[in-house]
Image (tube, rainbow, N blue to C red; front, side, top):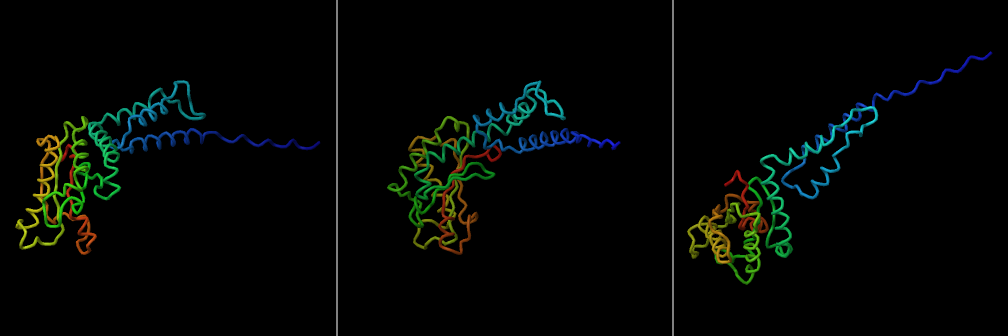
Length: 242
């Protein structure tokens, strides 16, 4: 009489609980990393809805999830004090990219963001003659009109703006009416503000600054670098830089 073969033991399912816990922790981690400054309200609502789970839903071998647990986490992150200003600047950046598409395409404007806020950079060579603070209105009129339209957006009514003039490291000519690049950079910022004011912006929301060649974006050792350094930055200020 042959011996009865021994049946293999069923594999343990204990790993499923650990696996479920790990996935949940990873999801919470990436939700916390989600940058509120780039929040799209519609996308956030979709994500929040997808995270809501019915009380009866469970992960096999793992723990039960209470309804709305992850959704509440997302809502708490979105309601942090910094999120409203971040959301506002995120929306402003999207509008700026759309509104200034012709200027970006023609390399008159670049749109970036840094610790100061949203930065709209005017390529100086497209707006001013070399060594001059007088705006070339034939080239800049349409752009200035779009800028004034942008700054009158209701979402920006409580914001502050700063116009910063910059130059390369080439000294001003002896025949120029400016004593140095300091005066030239400040005059360019001031003239941009004057024209924007003529087109209807509220001057009280603005400040101006001239930095001469002290804050270059690129090396002044090449003509291309100097061209990028000759610029006017218009900044939608973050609340910490008022």
